[in-house]
Amino acid sequence: MSNHDDLEEGTALNLDFSKLNQIGNDGHPVVPVVGQDNETGEVLIVAYANEEALQETLKRREAVFYSTSRNEIWHKGATSGDTLALIDVRVNCEQNSLLYLVQPEGQGACHTTREDGTTRSSCYYRSITSSNDLQFFNR
Image (cartoon, rainbow, N blue to C red; front, top):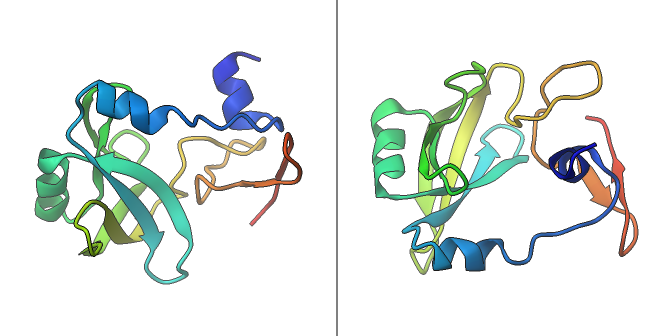
C-alpha cells in the first residue's frame, strides 16, 4: 500500500498535526467547514471554504469547498454524484468556521469506499483504539 492508502485504509494512527500550519504558510484564505447531516446529526466531512466556495455553495444550494491540496474550488459530488444538498449555513461566534447542514444526495459523503466498493456515508469511519491504532466500524 502507498502512504496515501495507509492513511485512508490503514489501522495505524498517524494524525497530521501540521495541516493547519501548512494551510496558513501556503497563504490559503480559508475557514474550516463542518458538513453535518441535517436529519441524523452525523458529521460527514470537515473541509475548507474560501470566499468563492462559500458564494458557490449559497448559489448552487450544494456544498462547495476549497481543496487546499489541489488549490481549487471543489464542488462535492460533481464527478461522483454524491452531492450534499444545502439546508442551512451557520457561522460560529468568532466567524472563523462554518457549519453546513446538508442532506446527502447519492451514496455517501466520503471519497473513499468500503471493501465492497460502496461509498462510505461519512469520512469518520474509524475509531482510535489506542495511542497507535485505529479500528474500522460499520454503519
